[in-house]
Length: 521
Image (tube, rainbow, N blue to C red; front, side, top):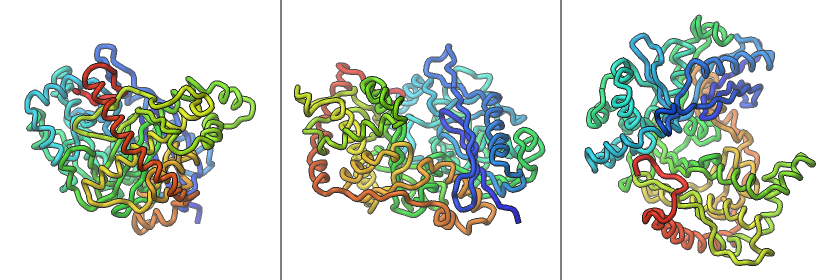
């Protein structure tokens, strides 16, 4: 019998990729194509999704990964899909795409304002039911389409997300799943399904919601057109996938209650698994359905930590960039080697970039470095660099405490995945700040592996999602906390929260400009 493979198709914010895995979790091949979401010049902040061009890119990825790995299409036992969350697609009665926007679309600022003015208490009411505020969900975007493109709004038959858009293109079948569907803000958390009354209360139609199918179920098989477009074998089973963070959680081994994971990249997410679908009474943290049936996730987000690192590298690390060209070493590795020599707490210096989440009133202060001295031996670019690493670890501590207040539970360890987990220094700082072990998996870009696990589970290769995790997820390293450093960070954390609060007050008084602010605020 020939070897079997599992395929994950991942529609991310900045690219699409097709990844082939062996059933033991090792990656056989990956082809990725970058895509971009262009702004409509009529509508500032818009990010239109080009479904024709982007499907062609997805097809290229699928065809090329099959060719480059040399496998036969019939060796692919199953396919599953994942994607950026919050991006939406609207279809007409013939199943054709008529409007779509990416998750980073920010055109609906006015609509958030209208919703707040219409009923100032509605956002909190809907949050307690759906786990979502207006900041990221579909409600303001649908209102925008209703008001700015009424002809599209009237033609809309169905709303979908990008992972089920991929399934529709492969199979012709449309259904949404709870992990991504819940991020629309039109789901009831506890029932894990649409609640059309939420749409009605916002002045929206209640007749555009497709069926809901749980993650890990075989929904259909690749049809003739899907096979022709992609080079896949007609009849290949297609399994319902999920949102990128939820599948990344599975791909990094967190499928049980009270497990927690941190994804470090352009944005940082703290995810905590819970058996309760109840939201935070203070509306501070997001709550989503997990891709594991019967589990939910408290999710605390920080915008831009990875982008802050990129800015610092490009603005201040020219010597390291030049050395990197000569030696081939990574610029961040060169910076880490020097930043390791800076003591924990950076001699009392701190910075304010990304902040602890407050979902109902969500913003980050103006970027600031503070409490440094004019002493270049202590306060040089490596000190400033390390303070950025510490800022991000401190906000994770804030997120862990936030979720603890909402759920009554703390994790005994943290799984750390994403690009930032490649940094041993950042991983150690995270362990020292939190005071618990930090485990780094071998596969750090875990989202595609999570999709592959669901694909294998859907067709019986794994007896459960947990069985798929046991057979595929491996650990690279565990970072134990330095408890002396932990004491330093405990003291620094309290000061940092007060300093950050003062910086936010400057923003609220209009004296400084926020690094990021949610729509409508």
